[in-house]
Length: 316
Image (cartoon, rainbow, N blue to C red; front, side, top):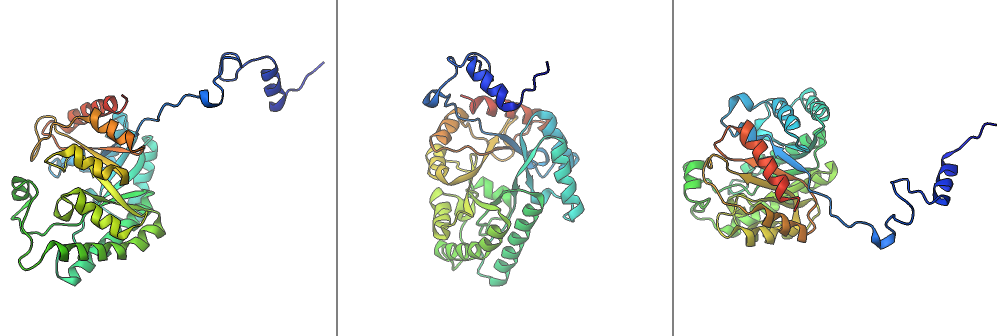
C-alpha cells in the first residue's frame, strides 16, 4: 500500500510525536516569551574610499574595490561618488551586477556638496548636483546617501583645515545664522527628489556647520522629515567624541567607523569601539557600520584588520 504524505500531514505527525522540526522534542522547544532575545549583529560594510584614499591610484576602480570587499568578507559596500570614473547607466548596472556576484549589498552613497556661500547660483548648482546624486543612488539601488553642509572655504586647503582641527573662519560679513538659512533652504529643495527615489539623506558631522552635533541637529530638526536623518561618523568629533556621538545616535541611518592602522593620514583617534557599539545598541541602532580606513598601512592589510576589530567590538 502506498501512503502519500503532504506538508500538513507531516506537521501533524511531528506535533503528535513530540518532534520539533528544528531539532529536539516539542517539550524542549522555547515557548512564547521564552524565545531567544538576542539582538541581530550590525552588518559590516566598507567605503570604497578606504581603498582609494584619494592617493592609491591602483585601488580607485569601484569594481576592484567590490572584489576586494567580497574576498575580505564584508556584507556590503558604500560607494564614494567622486571615486566613480563614469556615470552612464551601463556602468551603474555593472556595479550592481558586480556587487551581487560578490554577495554584497550596495548600502550607501557618499557625496559632497556645499551650501555655505552667499552666491545663490552656486547654491543652486549644489542643489542640482545633490538631486543628480540622489538619482544615481536610486539607479544603483542604494537606500541612503551621505550629505554635508559644506565648508566656508576660507582655509587654504584641506591640510590647513585639518591642522586647525576642522575649524575655519566664516566668510567675511556673514554669520552662522546666514549659513544655516542657506543649508536648510537647500535641503528643503532636495527632499522631494529623495522621497520620490526612496533615498534617505544622512547629514554627516563633517566640518562646516556640521562640526558639532548641535549644528547637525539644527538642520535635521528644522527639516523634520524621515528623508533627512544623520550619517554618524565616529572620527569627526576630535574633542569629547562619545558624548557628541550619543547626541546624534538616535537619528542615525548609517554609522561610518574610522580606523587608523599605521598612523592617521591627517590625525588619529583612540576610539573605544566596544563602548561605541554598546552606546549604539542602547539607541536601537541595527543598521550598517561602514569602515572608513584612514590609516597609512597598506589598505589591503589595514582594512581586513579593521574588519576583524569591528566585528569583535560589535559582537559583545
